[in-house]
Length: 374
Image (cartoon, helix red, strand yellow):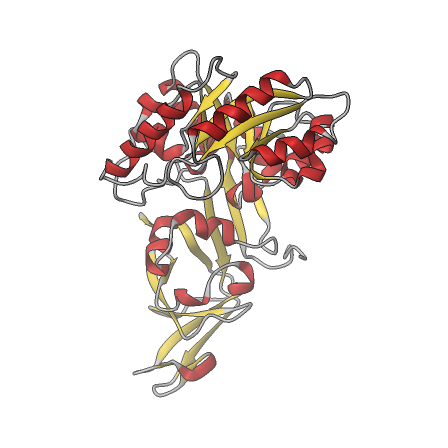
């Protein structure tokens, strides 16, 4: 996608906030625990290469991604740290992953049997995934898990590097289901005669609110970016610093007479003469159509989004006349007021990290406090 460099809409990403979030979490870990930065999905929309660099600066010792291509991108960028692909990778790429020193998640014996026929000299690092209640990927019963672990230990084509699970409700007040998953995980681990290097269960939510379960590595994800994985349900043990803001400018401003309608479907009609501002951003940028009726900040004042959000533009009701070029804050602070990604998510009936992941590449990412001389 073409990056919109010649319009005012842009994402501002604070590298110092990223580093601080990681540092604060590392301070809470046991001395024998490591933090792997989860930078999948283009670093939750923040930029995968930049997030790898900033989190490494803060003390992350490895990275987690969702797909093999993300891991290859990091290797091509020169990162030599451990990288774990959390999703299932097609077995035909097992040799490629081994050659690039990329660790893969495996959830069944058949995958291992097929991979053993492909891999040649370089052993493939494996993390066995356990389905303790997420229902997504991984071994579901102890017998097949034990068989797979044993086969890894016997086969020189593999390095049994890790075992892990993922909790479905770590960000909720009710810990009943969480505790069920913990018990299942412990039963799985009891089948091992020798533990691999990494035993890990903690995503951001687990590490924040169930740190006793951390194992010797955590997969720190949404917390990197300063967003609370529970929304507002649970209070973080330290102040997470939001790293991303979204800003633009008014591209047009006009006085609309009473009775005139705005945007597709004429869903908004002015009840009196009103100043209406146009902002050059829309759902093609990831600012979703369902946010009609939400608000932006202009001059420290909340301004309602009126009419349907278009592909490339949207309109807001202004409290008075403002000139073209007036700054607009869609996420961030202005005049002592703020709009957070959680605010946007709650209005859109979703979660904060769906919002940041949804911002498209047409929006430039501008990095501040990145330590690079300008």
